[in-house]
Image 1 (cartoon, rainbow, N blue to C red):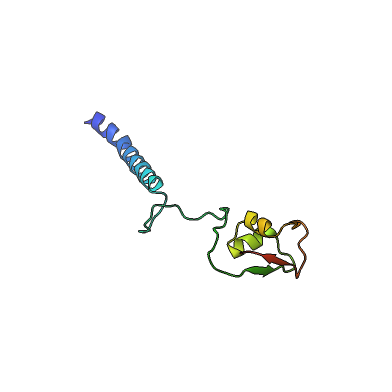
Image 2: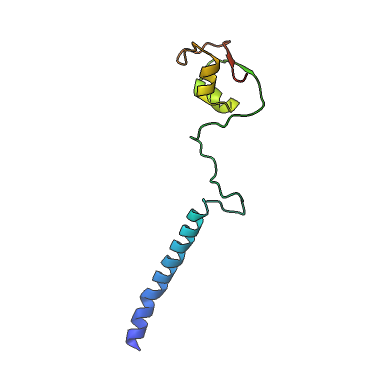
Length: 104
């Protein structure tokens, strides 16, 4: 009986760790969506490139302290699109009151 008691002392923690590992693997393989979210795609990342919106303002008036990346995120327009629509734009020298085209 002493040998059986010894093995049961380490089997319970091993079983618990195994159950936790299986749970993590299942959550990771489902794309990390928890709480009934469907679609299977992971939640958007804060560093992901902004998705182009189909509607919204055509122009943006630069405010003091604005950066091109902040404008891009808030307008939902990729930086490359803003640069293409505003030839000659100096991204390091945005001026308050400057008008930027966001969409055609």
